Length: 283
Image (tube, rainbow, N blue to C red; front, side, top):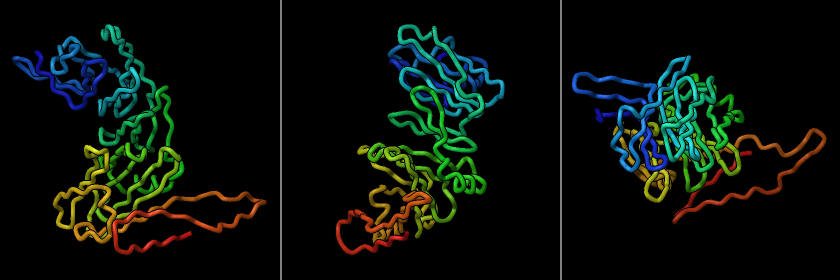
């Protein structure tokens, strides 16, 4: 049978690699949540049943995402992170290693690929997987806030989105009321927050348009899905989206115990097409 359906997919060396598959034959259907399968070269829709890689995780779980990283395949499971090395000449000579058996991934919406690696959300933190397949937590600076959010929000509502235009990571829990959006500035390695308030009842999804600009889909005041570009979403005079935005930098260490520091000036830059805008600065 070539009737192979799958939940997750990625491309490498002209082949499509898929994970968490369902194969429909002449008589029955079989599901393999721990299988990775790959297509014939140059034919991504042709996936023979003989081209499979079985991931045996002693802790159980299923595949929740698959991505390419350099010349390897990263397979995210609920109980571990696997690395598949696939030679470009002969993919049947693949090698499989469970790089991080004690770190799992929540679901596919908690995975965001960036040029320098992959960010993914687990039960306890957001992790960064670099090209050397080492993993580190990036949520230590906001650990208390993160734990507070994770204790009151459903794991299924966590969403990560990489913003290639400004090289930052958006993190949202989609709360029912005002939306708290955590933003990780990858260039400066610092966290801050977008605090949305107004008529919106929570951002439902995030994506990118053809110009690599952020798109937010929120539920709106009447619970209908509404689409808004990120550049317009922050406009408090927009009648469709009366949203107030707060950017919070977090604690900035300016002095040591035996040194006093005086802040003499703080510069802010805002862009606005016209009219007046109120800017409050709290220190």
